[in-house]
Length: 441
Image 1 (tube, rainbow, N blue to C red):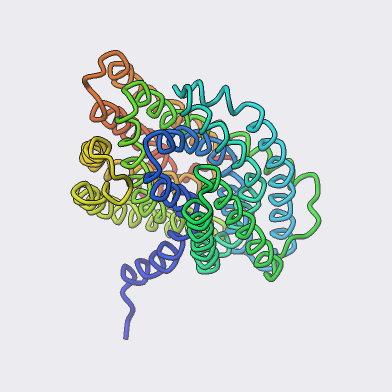
Image 2 (tube, helix red, strand yellow):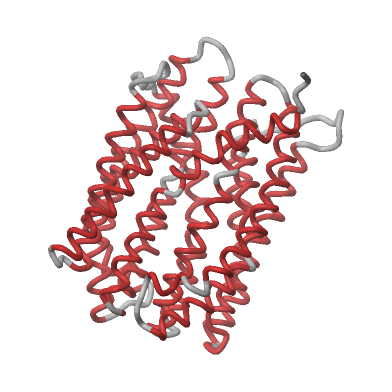
């Protein structure tokens, strides 16, 4: 019986995308659990959490290159025989940089926490709570970065099931610890932070154990592996800083609209982001399979994969837009008992639902450009997309009556700009058939 090539490709995409969703969602799930548990403590703890998690998101994203760059390199090497040793050196370089960089960033965050929370619009009790949360969370950063390295290793080998098991286990541990600390021992907002740190430590240990069980287990890295990862990391970090600045600026604008709007935005944004990451899961097979196809010299297969994941992403984004809007009717009640914050969250969820298809295109195109390894193009696109965000964001900051719909409209224009710029880069790499493939050197 002849196998339908389209169905076979869909099956391959699903086999990697579905379990990849769990590992991608690990950090947002930590934050979502925090929001659900802390939201019932009152407005001040919830607002403190909104400020702190926005700052932490940037700190986490800056080092996501430890996963993305490692994934692409390992996938390309895995497509050729006899490369286990080379892949092991790449993985070891990721672990070494993760440990050193994590310790450095943790120290800087602990020192800069009061300044960071103040810059985001926090003051008084909200700033004190956010600062305390950030300083505790800094302890978990080196372990989070080690998890990124391990995730990049396993995902590059097209193994998404182990990261899924780790993510599920770590989140169960996180929720259990937070419930015990916050509700049982009445440790308040700091208890929530300590629960997340414990889960991050456990996840890092599980990833390290899984890495050392692979044929491409970490081996002593040489200077070229370290230098290449740092070079790629520099390009990706600039891109990620640009990526993180926009949600951070959005939080700062909402913080100036008042505590009710900030609490509602925290609930809406965490739910939106959690759902949007379902779309980011499609970026994983896009990255891995495009990298592997190019590593084996099959450019036509890379083109076919790109077309398919874009179609699937747009369909999934439309469906998630409907789901996001539906959640507005009941989900806010799970996060807070404050009627005003619930209403603000409802408005935010309805506005954010319209951006999900745009998020789908942006995330999938991210994966495709990562697959061809053009990190410079990703950096340029992300910086350029800020231009789409600024005008409407500035108007909302000036005219507060635009409220959350104004902020979400600005975020939608940002996502649309990213999609256009990344889409143009992908089209240049895969022009009409028989045209020459242009890849970065």
